[in-house]
Image (tube, rainbow, N blue to C red):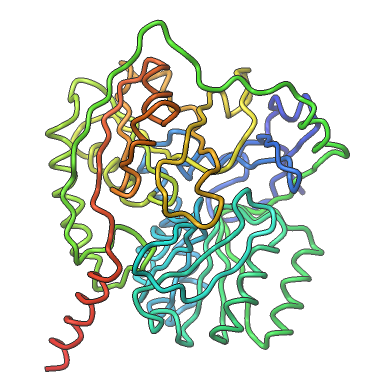
Length: 436
């Protein structure tokens, strides 16, 4: 027995439907995703999450609760092995979600894949993602030992459509470091029975156990010719312009060298207390700099999701009405019509220069970035790390240019990025102290 999502513009116009299969987690597909579109020859439909904080400004408490609930499912699957697990979040979409899951299970290590080639960071492994707009994933832990073990590996993504990405990653990583057990965790699982059989076949091929957990299961009904029909749509109307330009301001937030700013180079269980202390100090500085009379939308920068999410949650706890979302590399179709989740969109030049290959030159995107039922017009707080604080960020065609042209006031909060060399030395020093 299945329920169908309430009719949306994408459903009524194109016949794109998402169905929900009953689950016992307290979440349903209609609560977790809405149907969207994108101009991608690999896949024209997009599942727009209502709990991830990527395309839609979302209450940070909702994002954190979904990640914690998913972590509980992982813990149930792994039992006593949960605290030994290595959790891997897929860039860019699931870097924050993966961190939430790792926190929930108190995992030994959290690591997310990255598309950024960081100076001084060794590339331990990599894999490809078939349907993504940006396909190359790199793993850059401070030490291969963080990953090169036989602990269970938990792979976290926002949604699983076919399972192919997760299986390709498991195969590639299994060649690098074989393990007896894997768990694939996602907010929604939209695989068909055939896809599930494929997962079982790969598990048998590798001689490993592969579990799958999700907050809700369902399936997607994609009409014939959807890709061609979406491609034939008129160009979306991006980068709206307001009668009066907004203003931009900057603040640098404190962040210690020995605390990772996210999972790009690995977050250890021992790092969590220091991370929490660093968040409090950064939130204090942000609170002092922002306009306290207005609500806020905290906007993370692509893979930098979890730290901005925690800042948004800290602002909420201090009495500021706050929503959270991030920028993205993925182009989606924008149309301002009722019943469609992508009502407003911005495209801008990539601010950083240290990405993999030609992806550095690809445009970036931000969707919606508005809170229509807030008591006052929100201030946008863009949280970036310092490699993104460039002339591209500030100049014509950059994100500040397009947002202020739309009449938005933007506070840019710059966080010192983690130096993998300094972090590695700090960890080596702690090991030496512990061994004395």
